[in-house]
Image 1: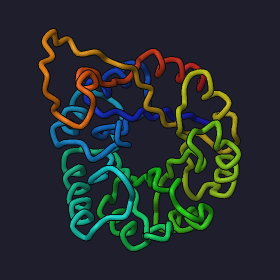
Image 2 (image 1 turned 90 degrees about the vertical axis):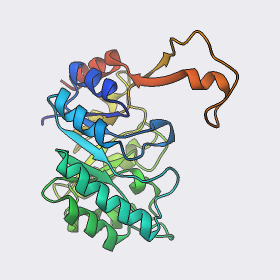
Image 3 (image 1 turned 60 degrees about the vertical axis):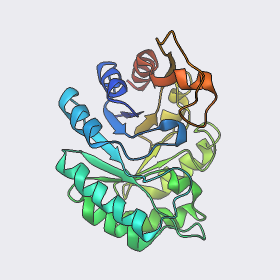
Length: 245
């Protein structure tokens, strides 16, 4: 069984690092610190131009939950159209009802708008009330894969559920494991029967080269946090690829 390593990147620099380190696919987003939101048009275009592996684009209009207003959902559909036009190879998104069930009608609209691109239902799945019913519904809607940590904070904590979900889904929809996957634990998760796709952010801290820091915050973070960010750690990507061979 071919094993696929998808790396989540919120910059083109990270996407290039992941590609060069052997990643099989990129999930491109913005602002991973908030769980990822929709990336800019420039990031999509440049990622496609500079790397030679598929780029799936996250569609998420804001941080927080997966219950969206009509206006937010209108933006999501337009973002899907724009991502397709810019050469995206797949779409990643998810929507829920207030009671924690999958929003069937909106998911159907997104899958249809994304067509013919494959659609991944992201970790909104891990916030849904009935995961087996969700698998049935998403498979029936033509969703290609479900991103999940087994409804637990990490893949290792959720491995029993990952096994259960993969067995239940069968060949109807791919279960893609995620949740703090690293070289030291990905082998244990990849040993679960039915799992062949794995998703990781594989990040490292990057310090600003600015010498002068001033005394004004540009956002809500502490001053020094504004001179630090994260990018893909190529060694972590290489390490996970070696474990998946």
